[in-house]
Length: 80
Image (cartoon, rainbow, N blue to C red; front, side):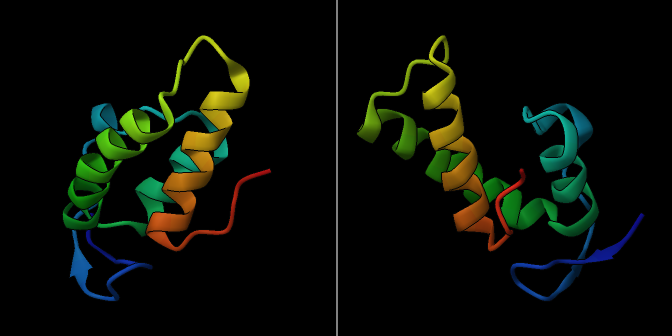
């Protein structure tokens, strides 16, 4: 399935379903509108965000920080 990426505006393939760890609407939006190339860039940035903010995924607020950082990086409106 090919798509036009919302971030880079180029045609491409979506990331692998298994690589997108988010759930619900955010995962669906990523799979429908972000190419695998931009997702790979996010994966590199994700490590930096986790380390910079010292995120602990047991804390729901920390998970929300990561979701927001992802949406900002990919140019998506935050999921509600």
